[in-house]
Structures are given as structure tokens and as C-alpha cells.
Length: 395
Image (cartoon, rainbow, N blue to C red; front, top):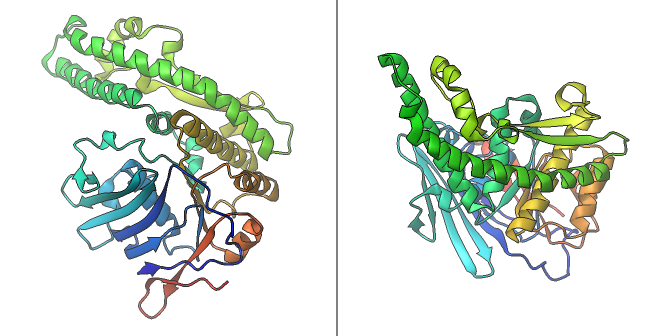
């Protein structure tokens, strides 16, 4: 299936905004509920509209795959293969100031993931991270508030890794060492005995890489929190005050001291109970936990503000404006929050933006008057063949 965009009344006659990169073409094969899709995208605002269930969110997730080599929603790659098929492929052309880059990500059942750039496969997926940064805002972000600390750490790590290669390397080596140390602890329990001295080679690695990761997280949070507050106040009409705390045992005790202190607990639990892998982010409103005391509207506002702060900081650190993915966002926010987003759009604060919505009229109304290249793609169910088809948007 081919997605064809027809410039509607929103298309700007002004020159395109100069950007570091944008996704010019997207091709999918057997990805989630899409059998085959081809889309030529504009450099600024691209709107994917259609009823629920036609795969609009999946298109954004495909862009996330091209940018970071993984799904935003499901860490198990094989779950993203269309039911009944053996593989999926996501391909795209990133238009950069240095030329076009062809990116391909493919997963076949039972085999390792393949990620390549200009037909050269990466030896390590981590080498791709940061080349094409992306920020996604979706109703599913509520898991950051409702789920456990692992989800929030993954959000924080993924954010920093897009512009800090040394951080990503430290994190990878820390996690690899952590796995080895935990294996040793299990062996101690199975065989009996074991000592803290026997763990020293792994502990030295944990101390070195963990201390580096903690320092970067602390410095990063010091920059992120003011941006969060700025966006929250810009979106919200209420008087509430929000805060974001990075909570880590390393803030009070060096990791070199934490590990021996936790030796008895580690041996009993058969895994490492102290370290940066236990860190958490604490969201509060008026000095109370956001999860418990924040209304649904306040939680949504907080998450949108957090993601916009993520965008600003990624842009500042990497000198690249990330692709911004807005999943069904206009259906979930009130006019006050919508006005803040539209103001940022009208100020050309973002680069390429991909938006999904069930109501094309709502998007036309919201985006009317912006001096941007705005393109609409219409996805709908073909009742004859009961699969997704794409038709030209009627202006």
C-alpha cells in the first residue's frame, strides 16, 4: 500500500525550514498490523488520520525503530512481526545536510535483529543511537507515572543516550558487569561459601561505570527540571507546583561503600541490591506524589511538559532538532494544553513533526494558519479486502 499526500489548504508557500535531518521516506513490510506501506514524508508536519485500529500509532513506532533501533512500546522485537509472517522490515531515508542515509531495520523470528545504514550493518546497535534523535508523546506515557522504577530508568537512560555516547558505553558495561556479578552470587548460593573479595573484579567495574552514570544523571536532571517547570506553567492554567526528583543511594553514599555494606543482603537475595540499577525518578505535585494526588488532567499536563523538556534538552545537547512524534495527542488534551503546543509549532521550535489523530477536521482546524508545510495522510479500512488501505486526502 502506498501513502500519498496531497497538500491541503494548510500547505505553506514559504520556503521549508532549514533542519539538520528529516525522514523523507518510510517503507514497512509485515510490521505489526501493516502488510506493506510506502510513504513520502514532508520535512515539517505530517498528519496520519483515520479511525482507531488502522495502525496510525504503528507508523510512529516504525519511525522510532529507524531512529533508535527498537520499539517504543514493546521491547520484544519478534512481537512486532505481522501475525502469520516470519519477519518484518522497516526502511527509511533520512535526509541530512550531508546527503541521504538509507536506514534498514529487520527482524526475523529466531534470529538476531539487523540494523544497517547505507547498506552497512552495524556491529553494535548502540553505534546507531544518537544519529537521528526522536521524542515521542503518546497516551501510553502514563506508564511513567503508574508503573515501577524500571520504566522511569529506561526513559531516563534512553533520553541521555541519544546525545551522550560515553554515557551509553558506561551504562552498557555496567549492566554487563551487573549480570556477571549476579551470576556469581547465584553460584555462591548453589555451591556454598563465596566472599566479597571474590567479587572484587566485578565490583571495581560497577564502581567505575556506576559512578560515571550517576554523575551524568545528576547533571542532566539539574538541566531537565527547570525546563519541565517552564513547560508545565506554560500549559497549565492552575497554581500548582510540580517537581521532579532523581532518587539514588549514590547521592548519599559512594558506590564503593554501598557494595560492601550490602554484602549480606546480596548473598541472601542472590543478586545485587544496591547500585544505579535501583535509581528512580519521583514525580510530585504540590509536594505530593503525582500518582496519588494528581488528577488525570494534571498527570497528562505533567507528562506533556516532561516530553517537551526532553525535546528542548536533546536539541540543546545534540545541536539537532529531534523528530517529534505526537500520537493521538490532540484528542487527549483540553484547549489550554493544545494552545501551548500550537504556539510552539507556530514558533518553529520543532523540526519534523508526525501527528496521528482520528479526526482530520480537528487537525485541519488546529493547524490552519501555520506557515508550515503540512501534509495529510488518510488511513482507512478497505471493507472489501478487510485490510488497511490509503487514499488521497480530500482538501
